[in-house]
Length: 394
Image 1 (cartoon, helix red, strand yellow):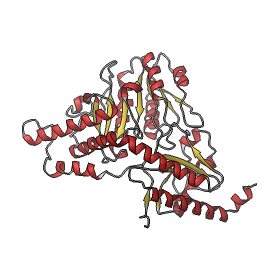
Image 2 (cartoon, helix red, strand yellow):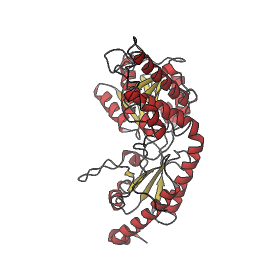
Image 3 (cartoon, one colour):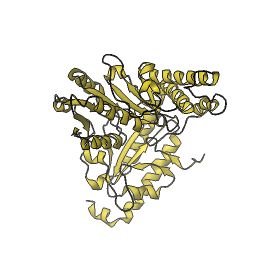
Image 4 (cartoon, one colour):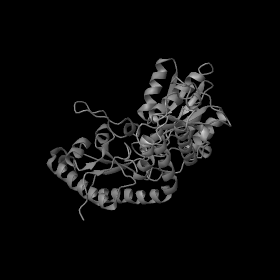
């Protein structure tokens, strides 16, 4: 049986919406279309009940209380609310923020904005596998530190940070701790209590839910987290985030969370087997290939591979029937090497030769077999035509 192409292996960027999620959402477009803030009729009551049910489903997925879940338009907005909200709420007692060099641009760009407003930001290095050393976090904390923000699972290389240990350090120092868990929630077990986090950002479309909906976990007890809202106008979401709630998307987000919680143990095992199959199939047949990130402490669906001597954008263009991505934010005129891979110590030429494969719930073994064959054939063809690569070989 022939494999249907194109094959989608870019699940870090976004996932397809699970059909069961679509089914759950549909009535809230045409039948139960009320505004959840309308308190005086049945349409509003049904919408509000659906929102609160979804809030509970999402809270259960991460081990939180329902009241600690605030809906946003996505992880980027959640990160903005967390970082800017904490900075504004604590500006009178400190102006120092700690983060890592490998954070998502959503975090790094906000930190640079804060620097322009008078805040001081420490950008911690990572090791060759992309790990942040908790001891370096501890050493960086000063009497002026008000926030530490470290990503739970890296979006490019899949490395999972020692969040619980870092969170314990922050808790002892009395410093708020935020983690961007966008790539982790719904993919691996997450418990806000055991991780010692005060704020956590994540998004629906990374876990087989719809785009345009995300959440911010805000700890309410032991200790209570205080921050300043960033959107005014109506006081929705207990004053944290004003604006009419996207009820269909919230319902879908909740359903995606429920499915993720139920199926995660089996899904993690299946996807990690396919990932290992992909890596073994490629590295056993091609020399000068390297898997980036941590060997074991990583997401089950992530594989980032360097193909030395080949430009990643060229490789992607030559296998158009496989949807993957580079670790670079590139334009055809001026490629910019990935800041994540650079931070792990890779040379720019190797950074620009790296591809991220993102497996998912609907990835099949047949698709991985096809991908292995296609990648190997394409890399060999490009290398054979490259006199530069041939000259570099021993």
